Length: 277
Image (cartoon, rainbow, N blue to C red; front, side, top):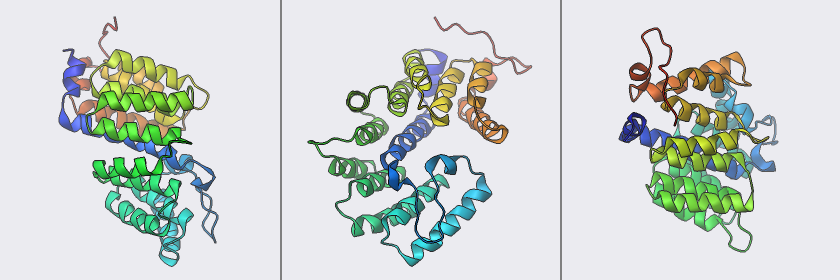
């Protein structure tokens, strides 16, 4: 086993990596026209704009949407947005409670069920999340986002072969979709196959629709192989200075969890040359 693969055997690291994959996978389930809300004085807030907010901006957005939700807890658009913001601020139990209420009000809504599955998975209710996502899927008109979400949950359950089958089903329905290709790469990260993971990550990052989460995943895989300068360059690409610094901080946090930064870098902070052959 390589050093990187040994690092990946850590339970805490694998759990965080799976959670990262899961969040990225299921966020796409609600990326339709309902991804922002237009009710009352609440502004349109896309998932992409939420990701670019700092802690203060997120807190203000959470309070604003929370107030709207308190007035109208059955409103689908507000409920979806509020649960999304709560999840981004780490309040997974509260996000799940919100989605439970929205699901009660909209029990057959496919988008609501997908978001409910996301909330269940984020709260650790993986088997329940799998059942909810399966209930949202319709065999006669399948949704590639739900296949990807199902794969993410299966990966977190340790059922990698089944997970990869779901990702490939998603790619059959939506060829070259960067979020799905990235999820497939992250599946190989979880099993310690970093070379295969990097191949998928680079394919994902080269697609026109690739976002910062896809590049962050690529940076993680490159960094786990000891190529830290390259990893930081990827993490900083096409972002504002604040976003880039946050990405690099997160990257270092993930890598230092395995002491890989200290073990594979020289004392002056430059990475040691490592073969990728």
